[in-house]
Image (cartoon, rainbow, N blue to C red; front, side, top):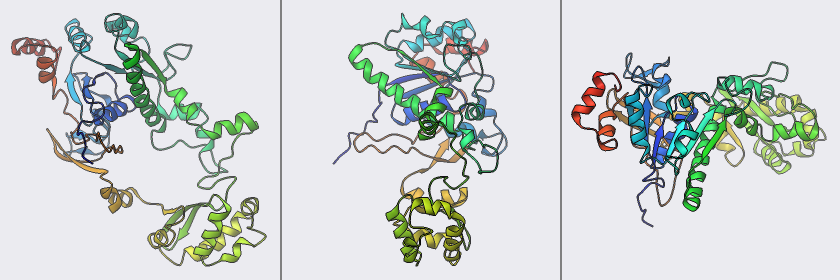
Length: 402
C-alpha cells in the first residue's frame, strides 16, 4: 500500500518558547510528526542546553550533545522578546500559529503580554501549553522545578535503589521525559478538540503531577494497602526469579513473572526438576528461597556468555545488561532505523537517535537536523512576519535579533 507521504501534523505551526528538556522534547516529537516548530531563543547564548557540559558535536566550540538531543527539525529564531520590537514580531508570528509552548515560571510571560489570558481574546484558536514545576496556580507555583527534586518529592525515589540502601534517583530525566510525552498527547488531543469546538485552550502540565501519575501501581500499592513499597534493587520484592544474574562475561536480566515462564526457564537451564522442588514450586516459595534459587541459576548461567544466553533464552523475558556502546552498536538498533546521521549547518555530521514513531500511511519526518542558534531568523522574519531586508538589518543593529 502506498503512503500519502505527508506527516500527520503537516500544516500545524508551533511557536516554541521552551528550553531544556520537557518542552523541547515535546516540540521535537511534534516536529517529527510534521509540525513547523519555530523555536524562539535568546540571542545571547540561546537555549540553556547549548551551553551544557559534556561532549560537543564538532569538538570544542561545537554544538552541545544535550541541545542536539531535543531540538531536531526546528527553526531557530534568535529574538529578544523583552524588547518591544521583539514582542511585535512574536505577535505577528502568533497570527498564523496553532500552538504556543512555554515552560517559564508562572507569571513570567505576563510581563510581556504573552500569558494565555492576554492572548486568548486576540488568538481564540491558539492552543497554549504551559509546562511548570507545580502548576499554574497554588502556593508552590512560584518554585523552580528540576527533575531529581521532583523524583524525590513525589515518592518516586523512595522505591528505587537497593533494599538496604537509600532511595536513588533515576539517572535519566524521567519526570521531564514523561512530561514531554504527556505534553505531546495533550496538544494532539487539543488540536482534535479544536476541530469540533473551533476554540483553542490552555493546557496546564506540572512536572509534579506527572511524577505522581508515573508512580503507577506503586502509588496504588500504598493507597490501597497502606504500606510503603519496598526497594529491591534489580530484583522484585514479590517476584522471583526477577533480577540480574551473572554469566561468564557480565550480567543478564530475567523477568520470570509467572508459573509457566518459570517452568520454561527451568527447562531451558537444564533443570526441569526445579518446578516441583518444594523450595521453588510457587511464587511465594521462590521469593522466600531467592538466594538459593539465584545460586543454582548462576551455576548454570556462568558456564556461557550473556550474548549466548540471550540467544538460548530468546523465547523468554531475558536479555543482556548492555553498556551504552553495546546497546547502540547492536545491529537491531540500525535495523529499526533508530540511528540517524544528521548534517548540521555548522558542525557537519552528527549521529543521533531518531524517532520511535512508525505510521503506515503518514510517516514522520525525523530527517532534519537540529538548528544552529538563529539559523532561521531571517527566513522566518521574511516569510512569516513580512519584514524586508532593511527592517531585519535594523533589528539586528538594535540587538533585537541575533
